[in-house]
Amino acid sequence: MKQFTRPLALLCAVALLILVAAVTRAAEPETGFKALFNGRDLTGWDGNPKLWSVKDGAITGVTGTNTDNKISHNTFLVWTNGEVSDFELRFSYRIVSGNSGVQYRSKVTGKGAFGPRVAGYQADFEAGKTYSGILYDEGGGAGGRGIMAQRGEKVMWGEDCKKQVTGKLGDSKEIQAKIKHEDWNDYVIIANDHHLQHFINGVQTIDLTDDCEEKHVHDGVLALQIHQGPPMTVQFRDIRLKELK
Image 1 (cartoon, rainbow, N blue to C red):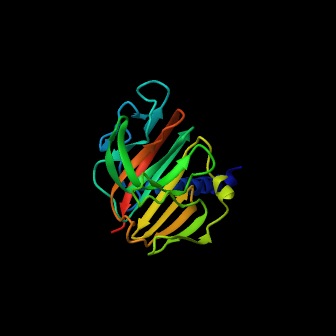
Image 2: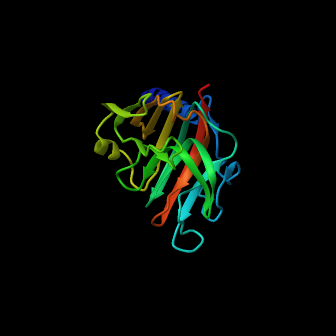
Image 3: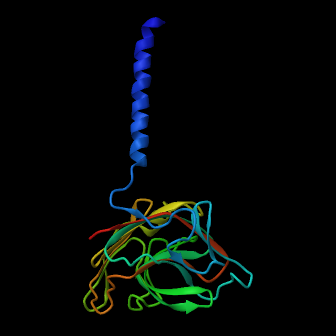
């Protein structure tokens, strides 16, 4: 048996080196990205403390049935450390019931009874099967255009501010099938000049070019949404931002 000792030891050593290298690569920080959430508290964020908190290392928004958290309007947790223009945003989310999303290049339009109101581009997601991945104009902040791109669409909003579907990224139902129900999913938003893209779990959900000069928005705040309606819980973690210029 001694004749097998050295080859076996060498094989084990090589396997260990491969494992260490893989772990090291996984732990390396993403070049150019900065964390927007410290994992402990809501430092750098502003919203209604009766609705927003940190649980299990994740920003958590909860609505319910009592007076304090049965909301009558959409409200938001706003990132207070600056505005965004051209960027890539990465985060993970989990949602149980209801609808949510991330506002970008948006504006705070005032304070409602349940916290800040925000309008602008929204990377939508939900516990259902219709809206996750779409680009929505929340509160008319991007010109009152409602759903600006459905899931699976490649879209051009022309200088005349009319929508044209110029291609398909895939079947909406097939993209939805790759989104984990009431579990953690990874979302990426890329905004580069007039070009906006959303991805969930590595699959592109929309591709939009907004050449409508009258309504195009180039900068504004980031914010996390909780939606009025039935009781819901939404969580966000690993939120990180890279400015593209």
